Length: 296
Figure (tube, rainbow, N blue to C red):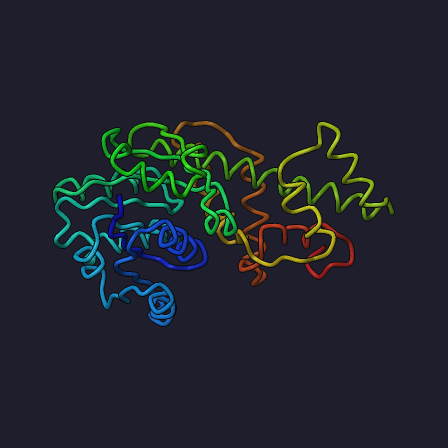
């Protein structure tokens, strides 16, 4: 069944999800972004409407997918027009934000007769375009069931789709996913940085890592980029810092110490302070390799 789908936030992830759903036969009814020129360009490409305001997106759509940066942005869009005429609409929220913010959105939307679902993404730009995102969902089971046909088309026909539980639970899982990923990335950078200082062949070192307990997924996604200093952004250091911060907040709420997450958070904060928060998270290697401009 074809849906009228609106998008709020059409950066690289949101735009590629919109392209994918357009190819699947859905109408991309409206797009909105904090950068109007970005929304206008995508709208022209997809034959969509570049909405002048958030209320237009809701008015023209049965499903609204939001892909924004942080808690502040999420609360702002739902406070400034997105819930106008929202009765009966379904909002699928894909940003990595705190569980409390997802629960706040659900409460606000429910009062308007609308439905919300968190669909936390554990993949990147290429997967958004190909419809092979790993999606972790939280909210009411009936809302998940209603949205599932669309979510299936974003997650390899549902093979990579997981219903986690009530609102906020998927966000908790996503925070832990990114916390561990960020720790692994920082650990890989330190291992390769020390190997470089020792004069080891880093290609051989990476091969050894891949066959031992030092292996991790980031070895594939970030290893070569660390060696080549190619930090083209797929997942920014700024976002890594934000997501590690979410996990640390959850740990504080549960009175659990997270020393590795805390150290990793400080590393990514150092990148931001150096003006390199826009680099990919693999850029954390700039802190560990001798001779690189951030190494102390």
